[in-house]
Image (spheres, rainbow, N blue to C red):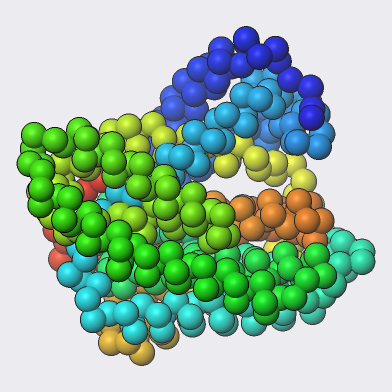
Length: 435
């Protein structure tokens, strides 16, 4: 355990850090909205600006002490607590996304969603093996690491879609309730599950375990969770809601929904498909009731969107240090970026056209699938913890996250310029973030 501050002082650091993060996220987020970028991109950049790239030093990890000004501002115990706040907030945000999603739009689209999702993972994983063959030096692949393990981690990074960022952009543009939005969010959820199954396979390979058996077991658990929510959870919730007055007992209903979202997130986390997927699945499983959904969203939106989500985005940005960038890395970075864009935008466009979406809608879906956000940083962190990628490769993942996320907003604006939106539909607080 690295050195840190005395336990009585941790709360003081947490409070000061939260204030700094929220101010930076709001100011930088507003600046990015002014130049046509989604606020979420500014919130990511805000974390980088108040982190080691600008302030110097480095944040402590479970195995090493921190140093410099950034360590003075974010000591280990406080930073760990901030990370937990952000993770819980992300689960609640994805619960709201699932709750708000018009479930009628998902009916009859299961095959479309599955086709798009499988294509958007299978081809990038194949590209991971291509990248592993071209980036086979010790700069990228640590000595002694099996090529299959390295390739699977690269494939997982290329196949990432920023599920929460995609959902938030669709909300911001008023497209979450469109057919393209429903297929996109549904596909992003499946992509996230499949991507974590790829990571499970890579982790099993790194440990010398059976890849097929490990992935197969996690897939069975994931399907069991989904079936349990649909067959057991949803009917029970529907029966309970019929027995109570929604307006009179709204507080109790919200509390029980939050508990359900956390419990499902816990199950998803233990399975290995990530807690945020659990939050989303529980939101989708809640029986359709527009009045109830709007009431719950009104209760939660300010806390989730104005507090929790910026903390998650900024804390993740704080982990990034661009001082590692070197000119010798440029060819590898460009190669990886090209594979990322072709593997998601190109493949997403082709798959969307194959399931019947119009060209501009297919481009929009491909661009959104190409957005990496911060989930690719999760892949990189796991890779570093298992010592199957180098710090330089981790930096490439970070650059890929920023580039693909920055290009998302302008391209979505271009391709959706003529798309009808539901501007008057109440969304999960995103509208107030553009003001």
